[in-house]
Picture 1 (cartoon, helix red, strand yellow):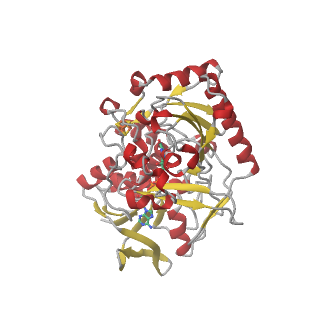
Picture 2 (cartoon, rainbow, N blue to C red):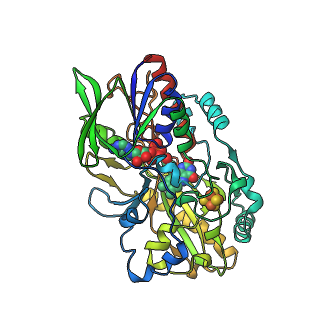
Picture 3 (cartoon, rainbow, N blue to C red):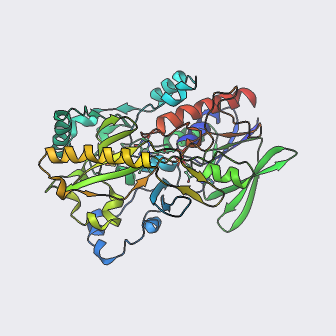
Length: 433
Ligand SMILES: Cc1cc2nc3c(=O)[nH]c(=O)nc-3n(C[C@H](O)[C@H](O)[C@H](O)COP(=O)(O)OP(=O)(O)OC[C@H]3O[C@@H](n4cnc5c(N)ncnc54)[C@H](O)[C@@H]3O)c2cc1C
Ligand code: SF4
């Protein structure tokens, strides 16, 4: 039975581990620890915003160890996008908004048919729009305004069982009520089928012998550690997997998208988006989406957001950005292009129109912090004979995360990553018994 190491336990890693656990000797190496939802009382924390305690978003990890936040700049050191990701069992899925959209147009354009994999995912993860019945009045008002303006909003399908949702508004801080699905469910299945999961294991590079990868090397706490394997699946996410490859002497493509997010907000007494599910409905435009979103990052770290949370109404623009950027062994470069900025401005205009329509004039609108949570694209699927195995990789090394996505989606990637990871797992199972 081949020994398979899966590096990372997020959307891609948990899926591969679950698929291979019954037939292979699977070990998942995860840099983070067990996930705990953010437990602090948000109203109480908000009252200390003015003290300057929240001066650097990077410090969020001390309050919420599962979340990592860092500032990215372009090659000249200017521009700033705050990159957010999960560092825990379940990866970034634990802090997702639970959105479930199938986004495989780019893959289909390359001739890739993942119909069977998407159908399997849909059988294994409950997907629902039943939250519509519980929307609060602000969510409905915004949707009605968007409709009146001809923007065609539609309810966003969600991953999970929303009959358990208590509308606490903390989706992106981890669901305390078990309503929202995250990849820990797939990890639990993998363990039930025989996989082993090790936390606190930061993989730094691959180890080679005779042109073949024989394992990985990294850190566990203060210890230097290594582990042998017959097959290695890198699923550390779109920012970490390319860095591991670069440190192993395998250069990825000098490209990176992140799906930047910018919120347009205004004061609306008793809006209550802080007690609403994240992103209840969506407007889909050419390479961007718009959705209601209580942006907790801006709320805590952006001076313009120093209002009571219940009185903020906000709409996000999420962009499919140009893949101008690069993940190096130690540094990530990312900036927005002129085209990105133009589409972002168009999205901001659309949000302003909706807020204006509910009686909030544009002079009262304020923006949030430019942030992003969907890094990917550095080793994309191609139309070649081996679409899911780049020729730069040794035969026994595979990638199964957002790194494979061919171009920015500007929309939620979890379903698409899970479908791709299933295909990767299937191919590994065919080749390595
Ligand atoms: C705030 C927010 C909201 C989001 N909402 C949605 C949504 O509603 N719907 C949706 O589809 N997508 C959403 N996303 C995006 C989605 O969660 C990610 O795109 C997806 O989880 C990426 O999957 P992945 O497998 O590539 O990486 P991840 O899920 O990030 O998993 C990577 C894992 O690898 C681990 N790791 C990293 N480096 C190492 C290393 N060196 N060694 C070992 N382990 C390592 C990490 O700790 C992590 O657990 C959201 C993202 C954010 C930030
Ligand atoms: S709003 Fe609902 S889905 Fe979101 S965290 Fe709260 S209970 Fe979970």
